[in-house]
Image 1 (cartoon, rainbow, N blue to C red):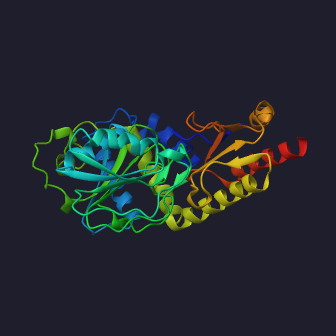
Image 2: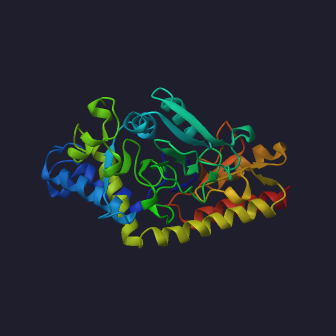
Image 3: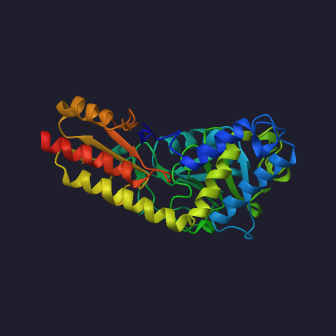
Length: 354
């Protein structure tokens, strides 16, 4: 039986993507070769890379607006330092809304002055800071759109006169935004896009080339743009599966359609969390993530019973991160609302039995 997979990542992907990707592992395009053994310089894979990059820009509404899409390696964690290496000349601003922004700040401090514009660390990151002032003269402002561990999500983004850089690893392609507000977006593939192994970077070209330091080739966005993401051997299977997932999203109707589905899933589980006296939400209501719902049991004595019921219902991956405890339901793009309904039914059953 296929389980209801609420894992935070690597995560659920569309079944048709799994099917097509598995077939390509054995025989890609009737070539008699696997997708993971063809040359990355062959026309077959160059076409895959071009399709993936093009689909990313199309879905984000950034075609013809001076942006380039890259598929790189090293995860979003490498982007923490690449961003600073390519843009931090004197000082940069960071919004600290969770573990990943905390780590991004740590890396950036190696290259220049970092100003923590606002933080919710004192409350274990259970809300998104508001009412802060962004100082003038920054090289860029960095934020994290969705915080997987804590279940918070930025609903609005600051208007700034400097490049706005955003880590969208856990909610990329999940909701419609004015993506042209951002100078650079990066996202690890393993949430809404594909398997772990590649990271999407979408960057406005005209913000590059303003740094004085010499940048190592592997960390230089301009080098990767000039080589069309093929400066070194790319993660072929991760890029291919990401391309399939982006194609699936396009065929579904794009971000507008998936946003509507995601909002329905989020409404379903948050309604249960708020109405069921056995559970309590972790994140501030106004900042709740549509991707990751975090919640705890009011009575820990029910922990074993609840987790047994989840297991019997085929529910996987709902244990919360150690930083928060409790539970986390990650509801990425490919998750069907029936899986959320199954979890809600278990939560309701627990209330009836308690």
